[in-house]
Amino acid sequence: MDSIFAQSLAPTEVVIVDDCSGDATLLALQELERTHQGRIKIVQMKANGGAASARNAGWDIATQPYIAFLDADDSWHPDKLRIQYEYMRDNPNIALCGHRCTWLRDNSTLPPLAKDMTIASISARSLLFKNAFSTPAVMVKRAIPFRFADGQRYAEDIFLWQQIALSGLGVVRIESDLAYIHKAPYGRAGLSAQLWKMERSELANFVSHYRAGSIGFGLLVVVAIVSCAKHMRRILVGAGGR
Image 1 (tube, rainbow, N blue to C red):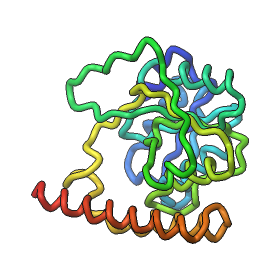
Image 2 (image 1 turned 120 degrees about the vertical axis):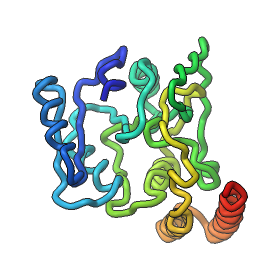
Image 3 (image 1 turned 180 degrees about the vertical axis):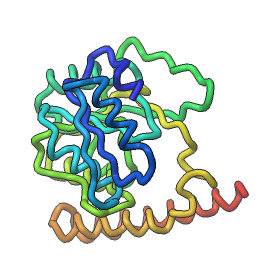
Image 4 (image 1 turned 180 degrees about the horizontal axis):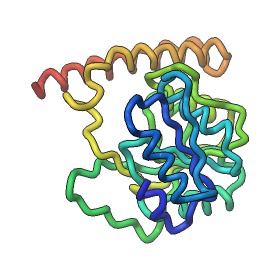
């Protein structure tokens, strides 16, 4: 929250979703709501539905033309919203704008931003082979006809990015670190124990795209084989680190 309120371009509204936290989180959010009257909206989920359902619930009540996502254990560079908003405002053909994201360890200083921002176009095909974005790096147009897959708990973010790109909408990445994660993405404290669930969801995503007619059978087979090979490599790397 500190990284949100430190933005050089302040957000018009901040939607916070409490996905049945079960502790004192809601009380803390309500205190924030009182402190920042008129800027914060709180959504309290009736049942824990996972990140996809929680993000959709926030998306549904958002009123601004662009939406950026931030999970509870991530943070933003102070210029993140300004840079992304100005780019999307000036390029109305872009439906999704992302950027690089880095792991910020304890007591680390923010990496300096490049003076000249490089913008890379991200193709739908490339997103089938590699996720180009972490969720806190993404800004999307609110009005696009896609959402996260309700109830899907793994690979739900890349599924949405793929849907947007496969529909023909513009997708780009700013080649600068404007968001930060604060824990290792893999390892004992990360998601290593959930690797198979993640892989199964990724394969299911490909099948969904095939059934929707977004990709052909040949491409389905290729991306499934590559995905399984990457899954085996993650397992081997994890085993070697123990």
